[in-house]
Image 1 (tube, one colour):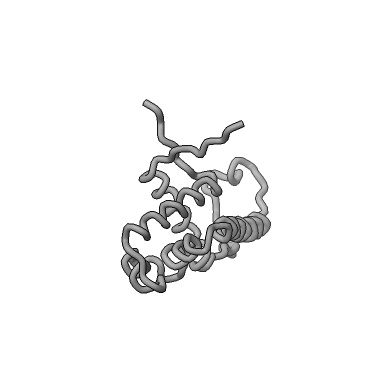
Image 2: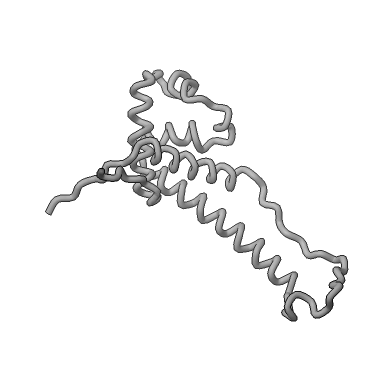
Length: 149
């Protein structure tokens, strides 16, 4: 029995992984704005309300606030678990370049020249990053495979 690793479309897969890590940063570092109940009266000109439905504004807002926070927390934990499974060098690269609060302002150059001790070459950095992206894409189920034409 043989198992072959899929051949991935590098650019599309890299874009998917970077998008997932950007979403992680947004969920992790930006505060969640909770919805609040409106205390002002809203009159309906036609009458009958909104299709004669009864709504529990406070209940739906509380449900949204709790479920949205839980969804964000689960997403962040999923990404963190996937990154923790990576080998040491790959994990370090992903955490420093993509998961820190300042990652929007950190360049690849800063990571491979100043964060790695001793510094590594750009080519070595690219190899380590692609290996990390490959594993993360498969682990998070966001890999984009090459289509056979």
